[in-house]
Structures are given as C-alpha cells and as structure tokens.
Image 1 (spheres, rainbow, N blue to C red):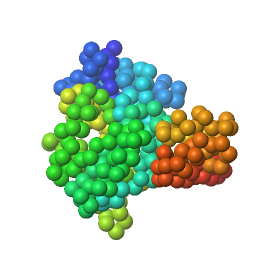
Image 2 (cartoon, rainbow, N blue to C red):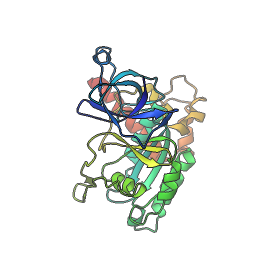
Image 3 (cartoon, rainbow, N blue to C red):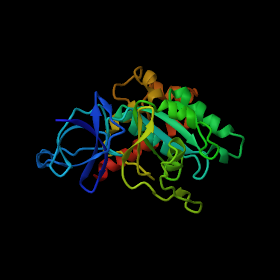
Image 4 (tube, rainbow, N blue to C red):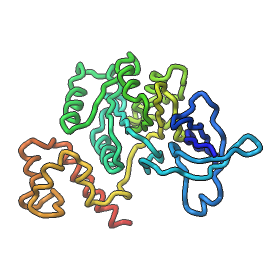
Length: 301
C-alpha cells in the first residue's frame, strides 16, 4: 500500500499527498481519505504532517490504514513531524510582546523543536530599528536564531525562504503579526486571506481557520496555523519550566539544592546570574510569572 503525508485535515477528511522515495510528490493531486474506524477505537487521531499508509478505494478516495512513527508532535497547534517552529512577532501593530514570545518559546522548548524567531513589520518601526535590534541581540545571545523581515518592502523574504527549504516548519505567533501576508510574500500567487488590524484592540482578526501544509518550493512546507492570543501550561509540569529557559541550564546544574525553583532558595546560581546581569530581567521576570501562573492553574484543576 502507498505511503503519504497528511497536508490538510478538515471536516473528518484527511487530504494526503503521496510519498515517492521518501519525498513528497508535490506535483500530484492530494487524495481525500477517511480514517479507519480501528484508529478511532484505539484513540489514534491522525494529524496534519503525519506520514501514513493508506489504500485507495473504488471511488477514487482513500482510507488511512496506519500512522507511521512521529518524529515530533505539537499539541497547540496540532501538527506532527515538524522540524522547525517559526515564531512571528511584529515590531508594531500589534506592539512587540516579549511576555507572549517567551511563553511560545517555553512551549517550543518543551516540544523539542528548533526555533526561528522572525520579527515582522520592520517598515513600521519608528526608532530606526533600534528596539528591534535590541530584541534580536537579546535572543541571539540566549542562542536563538532571529531574522527581521518586512512583507511591505520584501526585506528578509529571500533569506527566510532559503532557511525553510527542504523541511516542514510551523508558523505561529501572536494574532495580527502578518503570518498570512508573509506567506503570500514567500509564495507568489498563494493569496491567503489577510485580516485588518484592530488598533483599538491591538490585535488582529483570526483569518486562519485550520492547519494546512503549504508548498513553498525547494522541498519546503509550512504549516500556517490559527493565531493565538494566549497559551496555557496545562501540559507542562512546573518542575519542567526552568528547563525551557535555555540560558538557565549552565547555572541551574550548580544550584545548592536539587529541584531548586530559582525563586528564593539560598545558593541559587540562576538568581545570582540574574542579579549579575547574565540573565536578562525580562526573561527572569517572565519565568517567575509563568511559574506562579502554573502553580495557580494546578490548584484550580
């Protein structure tokens, strides 16, 4: 039976592109498939990005028989086998939100994916890009890859397209940052729906309705995902949080107490690093905020 990859899931159907020699046959039409009842009985839910074994039926459609092992899985958004998470955050409209950026980074670190931070709408910066460069420097120092783009001028688009070649990546980030606009710039003729920004509310209307893999050329596929205004930490243990702040690692291993929360314990090397300026104020403050948020949620649930 043929192998394929799910590029879209909608209304109970899975749209599958065939795999030829392990590569996605982009020139072939997607096969509309249903999932076998046995998958549902086993509690197995196919995701966009899943590599599957399927069979063709007499009416030209298909049936998903088996899911092949996943290399990665995201819970929110629900996508499998992604190599790179691309987090888009705008310079203006809406304004840069480092709290939300750090929250996304926690989730991506927990998922084990590589991360690329893309700062969008550079053409709207009113300080000659100084604030944007400061954000770029902060996260590059931590060890993240950061790009600056403008869909209006096109700057950064070619560099980003080359970075995404040959892999499945997931686009996510704050609502209204221009994900659809950037994808339209990356893939001429794509014509994704874009939403106007509400200046009063400071956020965009949600224009993406479902997760779908899109061919951007050079063997690259992007999962454009619904925008999020907030994330929760229910799938993450509070004892795992500090591991998701990658700059904490080299200090945390030398803390005086095992299981140090890095909040108040004597001999905490993370606190010492923060006080000496080796860990950024914004990052440590967000760590404390997330820690307390997680504690509150665990009590309520």
